[in-house]
Amino acid sequence: MNNIITTQSLTKEYDHKKVVNALDLIVPEGSVYGFLGPNGAGKSTTLKMLLGLVKPTDGQVRISGKILSPENRLEILRQTGSLIESPAYYGHLSGRENLQIICKLKNVSENEISRVMHLVRMEKQMNKKVRNYSLGMKQRLGIAAALLGSPKLLLLDEPTNGLDPAGIQEIRELIRGLPQHGITVLVSSHLLAEIDQMATDVGIIDKGELIFQDSLLILHEHSRSRIHFETDHNEEAFQMLRRAGLPVRMADNAFYLDNVSDENVIQAVRLCVEAGFGVLRVTEQQKSLEDIFLSLTGKQVSL
Image (cartoon, rainbow, N blue to C red; front, side, top):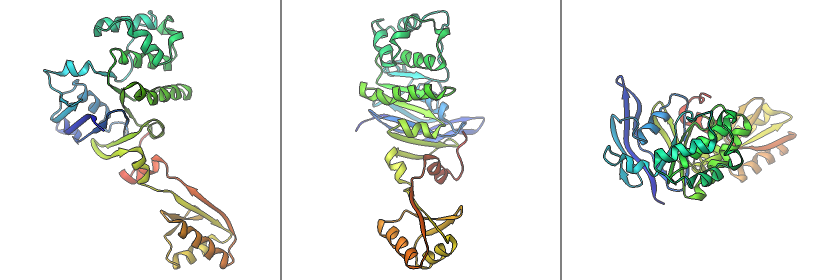
């Protein structure tokens, strides 16, 4: 698979402090790449460098195989859509009229408007004044504007910020469907559950440094499930299984086996039954993305 974005040692300093430090991003073509990290981790600064809005202190950006430079920036950006921070719009104009203005600025045919409004599922709101749009509709209009000109790459910075659950669901479904139309999406977020439900690939940034980058499946494999046990004598059962050499640990008045085989689970149940302990529950618990982030960074993500 080709990579639509690669960066090499991408770095940005402000007042001698590195807010982005030696970032080596790899965004596969046709993916939804979740760029995940706490607020202030360097996500927005990175996106602005990818768009040429902020000049890197060091390093290199390559988009669609071309090194981003002042000479070819406009050529590259013609194939790139973006929504950084809040979408800009004229509230007294309709959605269609707002997009007509952007078509003129981008030198794009107004025939594109119907296509992008269909992509963001807003055909019925095209002639409604934007000041009467909900926050989610305004966000979708911003994405529609970014899609004018048929970009191959779409950069979205926290697109679900401030939305209600229904709006978040709409934006999530929209983003998941864009690769079917030949569009690679890089979406930043501090919401772990959001990235978990829409991304195919993930990069995690913390204090300006990339601490993980791979497919979402690989991220989940980083922390396999654990088996939760409850018996009528938890402490005694726990001590017995530990003496038997099983990787067991105690927590919250129950005990767990981490990253074990089916044979280990069978052995633990058999030992408990043979010792006369009543086995109340044996359940598998998948670790959440929050748990995985905690194991990678050593701290909870700031939500």
